Length: 209
Image (spheres, rainbow, N blue to C red):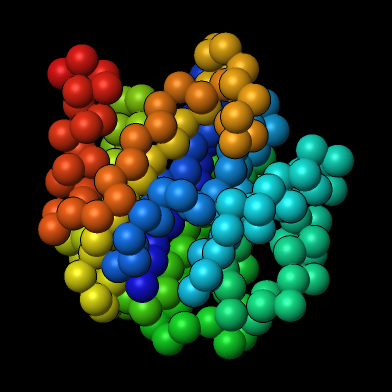
């Protein structure tokens, strides 16, 4: 009942994560990103930010994106989870556990990886990746466009209730809280009838639009 995307802006090195879910407050555990290192998202029935932090720590130790997947496969619930990784050089990896929720899929290309489960249609993940690639502008704009496209393709099987988006930038001051490491944008909608629409409104306000 969740779809998510991680991506890198090759022009300025920004890294970002975006998520939408039928569960409330998906942004509280959508993943972690550290400027100059990478971004990791873990999708599951009951994930925590700590799950993705384990993957980010592996990336910081130089394990590479595939090493992150290996580290997280050691979790006792790994078979029911999905993992997305992008590093500061645009290398990506994605994994869907064999016992993940029905209608689960993932996809990737250089600079971007996406996944989802309990989806309404088979085209949701493809829409995330395709719209991100077709959209121009700042990374936050591209991530939002990807969420919008995924929702238009059917979104989650149950009504979406929450959405969130985070971008970290090498040009922003480092911030220790939450492992953000240079947070440039951090916008969340925890419970709303149209969370992606509300996320777009908040992001527009954040950018002074």
